[in-house]
Image (cartoon, rainbow, N blue to C red):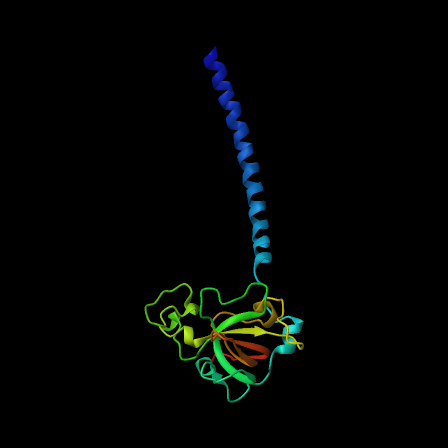
Length: 190
């Protein structure tokens, strides 16, 4: 008798489980399809923003200095034009601010080295002279204050993009160099 009750319970349980499995599978599919939408919302939106559009130049400024040449300037400069590539570290962005590091064009990204499978080629980790060929660029508004919007959202730029900035150069007593830029040109790949 005990055996008969156990068999009946197992049969009922299997039938219930079978319908539950189908219901569970359908519920899981609905949840998974919703997850993709949530994931999209967490990505950094592509720019440029309306403010960023006012900062982008339509023509490339001439006579740009390379990043490494800026270090050779004797003192701070009011206006300078500098060309470089966004990168120089695993994360070249300053979160929530319109600031990033960029490197001299003479440096070789890991993705340009045959056989190198680096997942972050913009960090230029194979370059021995990275410190003297990387600058901080901060995008500033008309009153000179740093813009509190992610540079990727503001300007529509990404890692390894070649950009030209019109900026003022400031050097501190420790030799750190910062470019405060109000205009930027994005060079197109050829």
